[in-house]
Image 1: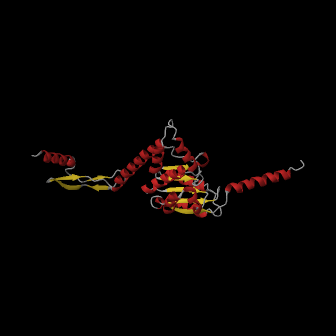
Image 2 (image 1 turned 180 degrees about the horizontal axis):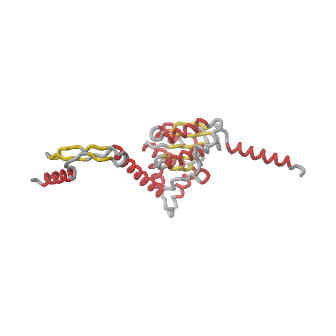
Image 3 (image 1 turned 90 degrees about the horizontal axis):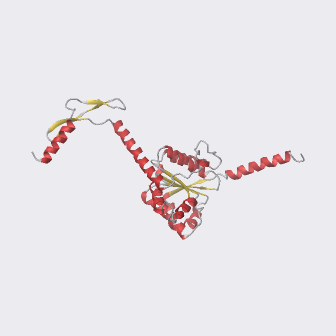
Length: 280
């Protein structure tokens, strides 16, 4: 017998081991009977035992979870994965104050999380007046995605550019290449305050690299901005803006500023206190 035929025979014997008769097993998950299959291996009839569909799905889920863990660990090693900050660590949709003008942005943000596997492959530009809840919605998306086991990076554009610039110091443990890689491989990149950065040729080129890397990998970006889409070209540069126009669906949060309303309310309370205590 030729060596290769002998090897095939050994494989056939291993495949058929303990399966000479019978013909099913119980699934460890659903407890249903899974029939064995008789196959022909080099002229020898052997029984093989397939796995139940739910066992295969469970295995695939474990593999995906492990791959996400490996990828997230890589991102964590390359970059501080979440810079949401203490103020927004507990941000979610239940504690978002829906006000006039913010209803559409609120619903789309929830839908984005719920349907991320399909709709979520699209990029979004959430824009509107400063202080009207855009960052809260972005943080709520970040926190919800992380709970689902996805790898999400949340950064403000000015802070991100400062972090990249700091890598020019030779003593810095991170490099520009490492940071850009982390921004490229995550499931979702959330950029807060796009357009708030000071402009320069270096800034324009760096922003383009970040956006273009995501574009080429067909990975989504969710950006917030206090600037309207028509004002972004001058701030970001033509190349970055062209990518944004192609990639991102603009969603306006039309609500007015929380901060101004709360400041006005506090001033009203203070004024009332002074009037009540006038001449006391």
